[in-house]
Image (cartoon, rainbow, N blue to C red; front, side, top):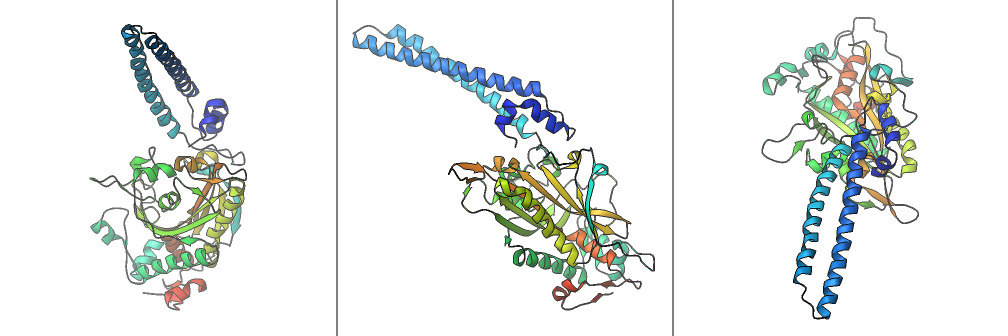
Length: 421
């Protein structure tokens, strides 16, 4: 959530920042609501002062032995007026809250201008896409040939955009998960968390999924819970409402993730690229504001290390203002090379939210002056496990349909070097 003081004092500057996202802020509606708030608060204060003065006059009259019945009747009107003003103020504050909650974060000045992914800017590349001596297959043909991916069973059990992993496919997914968690915990000093896979509305509001993106979530029919769309939700909410004494805080977790919105209609209908349920290892950091820019670079590097150890070519993209997520102030996407599609595809998104989430979460620390201040929060995928499995199959495939297991992953596969049918 944006700083209310900034919205009240510099609405035009906020509008200019949001315009970079191609989001139009109704400044007149915003200022009109704030003016209504001010007017009602002034009227309430005037009525309270008048009521207090009337009470003093009544008390003085009683001391003088005068009849105060008429004065008391007149004073009673103040209470009714104040109650009506309080009700009007509550309506205005609810309207203000609804408007402010719908506003995305303001992009940092360094974020590139642009409208969509076509305007994202390459930052760096790692590795060189492999030149095959044969025509490479995509992960669907490879996985079905190896007997490890069963898309027909996924449709039969649940529906479109689901898959069943069998045998070594299930083991490979488990190996990738354990490999990622071990690296982040031992090498990058994250605390591993095993959170609930359900979240309440307060948690989803805190990280920015509610109210704007409710239609993208899977909600339980008869209970006030949602399936989590990402472990960012429970991990960031671990400290909701607290004044933390130690910073930075680093959390990581493996969870399944559930999203009703699985991409543009008709896009990525083949294979595992976009599914309603997918597994992910998530990274979350909570830091002092002055440290968040450096923390974003470090967190992005932690996700990159997984790709490097798995010998998967990738590039880092700075997202343009129009392509960033709702809560983000700056975002890097990691895009892995997929030979089956002959293009780079997103496998991780690493974002600095600055104080946007912290304000919703009321998550603070004490500054040098001892006063509570909002922290900055960051998160990134470290990595999306399904897409990592896809990239591994396609980049390390052999001419006979088998798949080379990268050295870093072999201990998690019982020493296996080649995955074959």
